[in-house]
Length: 271
Length: 271
Image 1 (spheres, rainbow over the protein chains, first blue to last red):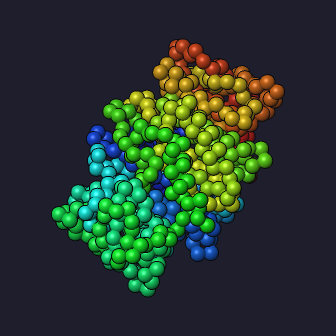
Image 2 (cartoon, helix red, strand yellow):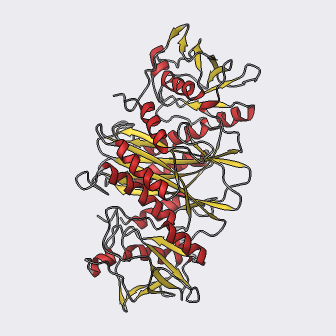
Image 3 (cartoon, chains in turn red, orange):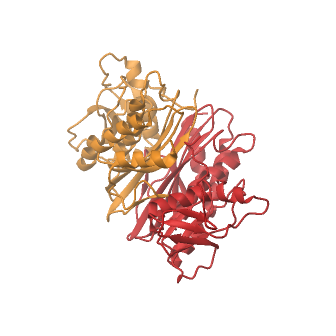
């Protein structure tokens, strides 16, 4: 198999691109619309770190790699536009299956595959870059939480799914409702809430934890890979989705029912 | 070391960003200017594939990872805007040294580090995404070569340097001169010229190969990692840089001094 043949095959699977130029040149080309901001994220999905080939098929890996990046796009309240996929793999890896699954998710979320990079490696490594668009100045930020805001989460926590659903529709709806502060829960509520509070220079008091069926409180607080959205809004804002779990405070501490909550989620560098 | 501490350290090294939002949120945020196209590329730089830790220090790897992506930006005639860096590494890797070196190149080429992803892995893996800007509709393309165009290359071929210089200034100058077709030489002239001809649906006749001092003709034709620009222009266009190496033809063949030239450059999937 030659690289050009493989790229041609992926190009055919990807179909036409709404970009000025998609797969096949040195770069993809996007013509931005007036009055929009563009948001960008990249996420590694690495064998034996984020998945194993015993638990995940090539199709599962393709889905997961895109879903992880889309979750960051959702957290900004952005509409997905395109992705670049860097993929390294050993001989025999079911690359068509990887891309078919990734592209099925891309079609459902209305974004196109615009390019990327392919390489050989002895393990499967994917890095997916997503670009999204939001009306100018309307992206939801980690740094926009204010004391007095109520704190919410979409969905229930502590039970990672094999194929997590990126909360794109929820993110867009929240942004339209006027929500200013949000992030996605990838490394566990306790650690991610600490990050949100740090960026906003605030604290939080948790009063209720929506625990997924079959999960423990410990898992709901510290387990990673929920891919739900954590967001805050002033009490006057009518929030029609998610669960209220607490409020944002002026003190820099994170409390659960009055007691300090230690961040114990998944820190890539703490172990 | 915690991930947030590492991200804070990189954020300090990176300095202020001209983006609406740089490092520290789920996504970076760019506010595009009117009448510009944005170009995007991603390139893996993987241990034991693109470098070894015997031949490359962390600083060399940081430089190379960004230079490889910038070479694609140069090929479009674009001005660099920002990069995202996904980096996975084993404990003990000189991550500060990697970023200092990458950021020194970024400053020289006037782009900012806007975000990325960090992970642990038993080998060093970098994926660098670059975004560049060009005036609307002016990006140089692989698909724009026309029969009758003269064929040029910047620099001499066959002698990869440890720290290749991305041809950003040359790319911008060529685009301003009116050059429409270009690509960067990363996998060897014979293979990359085949790709350019394929995208443009043309052929080429090579008549002169600028061989780097100490390199063989074989290396200049088929060796990879030159990171020079290959470009074409109609004879009436006055080209003030690079070397004329041949011309574009209507027949789909690639000839060197009248004989067929086989593409033998670096194909990631041919071996």
